[in-house]
Length: 224
Image (cartoon, rainbow, N blue to C red):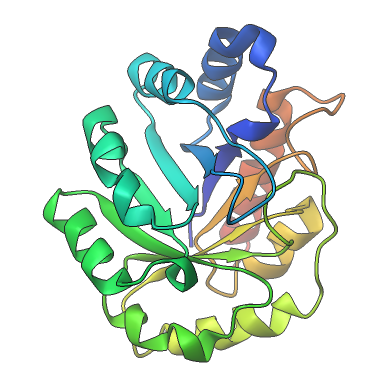
Protein backbone atom coordinates (compact mmCIF):
# COMPACT_ATOMS: atom_id res chain seq x y z
CA UNK A 1 0.00 0.00 0.00
CA UNK A 2 1.33 3.41 -0.97
CA UNK A 3 1.64 5.75 2.02
CA UNK A 4 1.18 9.49 2.38
CA UNK A 5 3.74 11.71 4.11
CA UNK A 6 2.73 14.96 5.79
CA UNK A 7 5.06 17.71 6.99
CA UNK A 8 4.27 19.00 10.48
CA UNK A 9 4.68 22.71 9.86
CA UNK A 10 4.83 23.65 13.54
CA UNK A 11 8.37 22.20 13.34
CA UNK A 12 9.40 24.30 10.32
CA UNK A 13 11.76 27.27 10.32
CA UNK A 14 9.47 30.31 10.31
CA UNK A 15 12.31 32.71 9.54
CA UNK A 16 12.10 31.43 5.95
CA UNK A 17 8.63 29.93 5.54
CA UNK A 18 8.64 30.46 1.77
CA UNK A 19 11.81 28.39 1.37
CA UNK A 20 10.48 25.72 3.71
CA UNK A 21 7.28 25.31 1.69
CA UNK A 22 9.12 25.27 -1.64
CA UNK A 23 11.79 22.81 -0.46
CA UNK A 24 9.27 20.44 1.07
CA UNK A 25 7.13 20.48 -2.05
CA UNK A 26 10.14 19.83 -4.28
CA UNK A 27 11.23 17.02 -1.95
CA UNK A 28 7.95 15.21 -2.57
CA UNK A 29 5.92 15.81 0.57
CA UNK A 30 2.27 14.88 0.04
CA UNK A 31 0.48 17.09 2.57
CA UNK A 32 1.21 20.15 4.70
CA UNK A 33 0.01 19.49 8.26
CA UNK A 34 -0.96 22.52 10.34
CA UNK A 35 -1.59 22.35 14.08
CA UNK A 36 -4.07 24.90 15.39
CA UNK A 37 -4.02 25.34 19.18
CA UNK A 38 -5.93 27.71 21.42
CA UNK A 39 -3.97 27.51 24.68
CA UNK A 40 -6.96 25.84 26.34
CA UNK A 41 -7.30 22.27 25.08
CA UNK A 42 -3.48 22.12 25.03
CA UNK A 43 -0.97 24.42 26.72
CA UNK A 44 0.41 25.95 23.53
CA UNK A 45 -0.59 28.15 20.61
CA UNK A 46 -0.43 27.04 16.99
CA UNK A 47 0.11 28.67 13.63
CA UNK A 48 -1.61 31.89 12.71
CA UNK A 49 -4.15 32.65 10.01
CA UNK A 50 -1.57 34.39 7.81
CA UNK A 51 0.78 31.41 7.93
CA UNK A 52 -1.98 29.00 6.94
CA UNK A 53 -3.14 31.30 4.15
CA UNK A 54 0.38 31.59 2.79
CA UNK A 55 0.99 27.83 2.74
CA UNK A 56 -2.35 27.16 1.05
CA UNK A 57 -1.77 29.87 -1.54
CA UNK A 58 1.84 28.92 -2.25
CA UNK A 59 1.50 25.18 -2.80
CA UNK A 60 -0.52 22.82 -4.97
CA UNK A 61 -0.33 20.17 -2.25
CA UNK A 62 -3.16 19.40 0.12
CA UNK A 63 -3.23 21.26 3.42
CA UNK A 64 -4.72 19.69 6.53
CA UNK A 65 -5.66 21.33 9.82
CA UNK A 66 -5.44 19.52 13.16
CA UNK A 67 -7.75 21.40 15.50
CA UNK A 68 -6.43 21.07 19.04
CA UNK A 69 -9.02 23.53 20.28
CA UNK A 70 -12.13 23.68 22.39
CA UNK A 71 -15.34 23.88 20.33
CA UNK A 72 -13.75 23.14 16.93
CA UNK A 73 -17.08 23.86 15.21
CA UNK A 74 -16.39 27.58 15.74
CA UNK A 75 -13.26 27.40 13.58
CA UNK A 76 -14.73 25.73 10.52
CA UNK A 77 -15.74 28.82 8.55
CA UNK A 78 -12.22 30.23 8.85
CA UNK A 79 -10.77 26.98 7.51
CA UNK A 80 -13.36 26.79 4.73
CA UNK A 81 -12.49 30.33 3.63
CA UNK A 82 -8.82 29.35 3.46
CA UNK A 83 -9.63 26.32 1.34
CA UNK A 84 -8.21 23.78 3.81
CA UNK A 85 -8.59 20.30 2.32
CA UNK A 86 -8.60 18.05 5.41
CA UNK A 87 -9.83 18.85 8.94
CA UNK A 88 -9.26 16.80 12.09
CA UNK A 89 -11.18 17.46 15.30
CA UNK A 90 -10.90 16.04 18.82
CA UNK A 91 -14.40 14.70 19.61
CA UNK A 92 -13.97 14.97 23.39
CA UNK A 93 -13.98 18.80 23.25
CA UNK A 94 -16.85 19.16 20.78
CA UNK A 95 -20.37 19.13 22.26
CA UNK A 96 -21.74 17.69 19.01
CA UNK A 97 -18.90 16.13 16.98
CA UNK A 98 -21.24 14.37 14.54
CA UNK A 99 -22.68 17.73 13.45
CA UNK A 100 -19.19 19.18 13.06
CA UNK A 101 -18.13 16.24 10.90
CA UNK A 102 -21.29 16.59 8.82
CA UNK A 103 -20.58 20.28 8.21
CA UNK A 104 -17.02 19.48 7.09
CA UNK A 105 -18.39 16.97 4.58
CA UNK A 106 -21.09 19.34 3.37
CA UNK A 107 -18.39 21.85 2.53
CA UNK A 108 -16.55 19.22 0.46
CA UNK A 109 -13.56 18.77 2.77
CA UNK A 110 -12.16 15.51 4.16
CA UNK A 111 -13.21 14.93 7.78
CA UNK A 112 -11.20 13.17 10.45
CA UNK A 113 -11.03 12.66 14.18
CA UNK A 114 -7.83 12.84 16.23
CA UNK A 115 -7.37 10.48 19.16
CA UNK A 116 -5.06 11.36 22.05
CA UNK A 117 -3.01 8.60 23.74
CA UNK A 118 -5.40 8.62 26.69
CA UNK A 119 -8.61 8.67 24.64
CA UNK A 120 -10.43 5.35 24.53
CA UNK A 121 -11.51 4.05 21.12
CA UNK A 122 -14.78 2.96 22.73
CA UNK A 123 -15.74 6.61 23.27
CA UNK A 124 -15.42 7.47 19.58
CA UNK A 125 -16.36 4.21 17.85
CA UNK A 126 -19.76 5.41 16.66
CA UNK A 127 -18.06 8.31 14.89
CA UNK A 128 -16.06 5.85 12.81
CA UNK A 129 -19.23 5.48 10.74
CA UNK A 130 -18.92 9.12 9.67
CA UNK A 131 -15.23 10.01 9.20
CA UNK A 132 -12.74 9.56 6.38
CA UNK A 133 -9.64 9.46 8.56
CA UNK A 134 -8.47 8.75 12.09
CA UNK A 135 -5.35 10.53 13.30
CA UNK A 136 -3.71 8.58 16.12
CA UNK A 137 -1.49 10.69 18.37
CA UNK A 138 1.51 8.76 19.65
CA UNK A 139 2.46 11.55 22.06
CA UNK A 140 0.58 13.78 24.45
CA UNK A 141 -0.49 16.73 22.28
CA UNK A 142 0.63 20.33 22.19
CA UNK A 143 4.41 20.30 21.76
CA UNK A 144 6.95 18.92 19.31
CA UNK A 145 9.60 16.48 20.48
CA UNK A 146 7.59 14.65 23.12
CA UNK A 147 8.18 10.98 23.92
CA UNK A 148 6.18 8.27 22.17
CA UNK A 149 3.73 6.42 24.42
CA UNK A 150 4.21 2.68 23.69
CA UNK A 151 0.69 1.72 24.78
CA UNK A 152 -0.60 3.57 21.70
CA UNK A 153 0.52 0.55 19.65
CA UNK A 154 -2.45 -1.42 20.99
CA UNK A 155 -4.77 1.43 19.97
CA UNK A 156 -3.42 1.30 16.42
CA UNK A 157 -3.90 -2.46 16.29
CA UNK A 158 -7.52 -2.07 17.43
CA UNK A 159 -8.17 0.55 14.77
CA UNK A 160 -6.66 -1.69 12.10
CA UNK A 161 -9.15 -4.36 13.12
CA UNK A 162 -12.02 -1.86 13.04
CA UNK A 163 -11.07 -0.80 9.52
CA UNK A 164 -12.65 -4.05 8.37
CA UNK A 165 -16.06 -2.81 9.53
CA UNK A 166 -15.74 0.93 8.83
CA UNK A 167 -14.47 2.89 5.86
CA UNK A 168 -11.63 5.09 7.19
CA UNK A 169 -7.88 5.47 6.82
CA UNK A 170 -5.40 5.58 9.71
CA UNK A 171 -2.67 8.21 10.11
CA UNK A 172 -0.06 8.46 12.88
CA UNK A 173 1.21 11.73 14.36
CA UNK A 174 3.89 12.25 17.01
CA UNK A 175 7.43 10.87 17.34
CA UNK A 176 7.14 9.25 13.91
CA UNK A 177 10.57 7.70 13.35
CA UNK A 178 11.74 5.69 10.34
CA UNK A 179 11.44 2.53 12.43
CA UNK A 180 7.88 3.38 13.36
CA UNK A 181 6.96 3.94 9.72
CA UNK A 182 8.38 0.52 8.85
CA UNK A 183 6.49 -1.01 11.76
CA UNK A 184 3.07 0.12 10.51
CA UNK A 185 3.16 0.90 6.80
CA UNK A 186 2.52 -2.67 5.62
CA UNK A 187 -0.05 -3.40 8.31
CA UNK A 188 -2.50 -0.93 6.84
CA UNK A 189 -1.59 2.54 8.19
CA UNK A 190 -2.13 5.00 5.33
CA UNK A 191 -0.07 8.02 6.37
CA UNK A 192 2.46 9.54 8.75
CA UNK A 193 2.99 13.08 10.04
CA UNK A 194 6.72 13.85 9.96
CA UNK A 195 8.17 16.18 12.58
CA UNK A 196 11.43 16.52 14.46
CA UNK A 197 11.89 12.75 14.85
CA UNK A 198 12.35 12.29 11.10
CA UNK A 199 12.18 15.38 8.91
CA UNK A 200 12.94 18.66 10.69
CA UNK A 201 16.01 19.92 12.56
CA UNK A 202 18.18 17.11 11.22
CA UNK A 203 21.34 17.10 9.09
CA UNK A 204 19.73 15.25 6.17
CA UNK A 205 17.92 17.27 3.52
CA UNK A 206 14.16 17.03 3.12
CA UNK A 207 14.68 15.39 -0.26
CA UNK A 208 16.98 12.70 1.09
CA UNK A 209 14.67 11.85 4.00
CA UNK A 210 11.53 11.61 1.87
CA UNK A 211 13.33 9.79 -0.95
CA UNK A 212 14.72 7.20 1.48
CA UNK A 213 11.25 6.51 2.89
CA UNK A 214 9.69 6.26 -0.57
CA UNK A 215 12.50 4.14 -2.02
CA UNK A 216 12.27 1.66 0.82
CA UNK A 217 8.57 1.30 0.11
CA UNK A 218 9.18 0.76 -3.61
CA UNK A 219 11.95 -1.75 -2.98
CA UNK A 220 9.91 -3.85 -0.58
CA UNK A 221 6.86 -3.80 -2.83
CA UNK A 222 8.93 -4.95 -5.84
CA UNK A 223 10.28 -7.96 -3.93
CA UNK A 224 6.86 -9.29 -2.92
